[in-house]
Image (cartoon, rainbow, N blue to C red; front, side, top):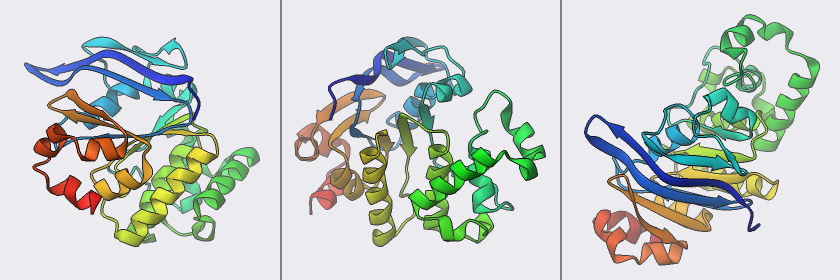
Length: 258
């Protein structure tokens, strides 16, 4: 792992009315890490992702990516710098093929926007088609390139969401609940893919409720609770932290350690 900071937030805060959904969060992710961002429901994890990716603006605090202040950038500008996210509700075009979805993934956050991509989807440049096929090969979806997204099994649909993000060539990939709804085998394959993505040079920050997947994949974990940082450290340290266990009422973390 590199010691070079790729992402850093200072005092990151977002209020919704009188509620501080994220409250003075200092987060640092070094190049080459796989970091987990966890916490009980309502802890502020998704709000944090929305702030990092430019979908909402912070009330206070700063976000720096590769040394540049990106706090006020729009989502497509954030993507252009190499910070790309997936979503809890996978953004798939159900009536289009797997390959077409990845091609559209190149344009989801672009300045020209999705409308242009949709209306010109039968005339994608050859280099974009080649890039998309490479991504499908890498993520194990090459054999499903011609299938409609709606006909893919749930696990493959989740992987397609990751493939759409990878098409944008991220330096930092934000994964929002990548194994939601998967069985043990499916989640194991996806988390193995996450490690391979990192080994190919992409830093990963992920939000996930599946504690077994998080503990087995992430090298460092940051725990949020009520919008604030509760704990940070290795999986072993976090899983035995009394404050973390109390926040989760024990159950989730005990299962993960078992």
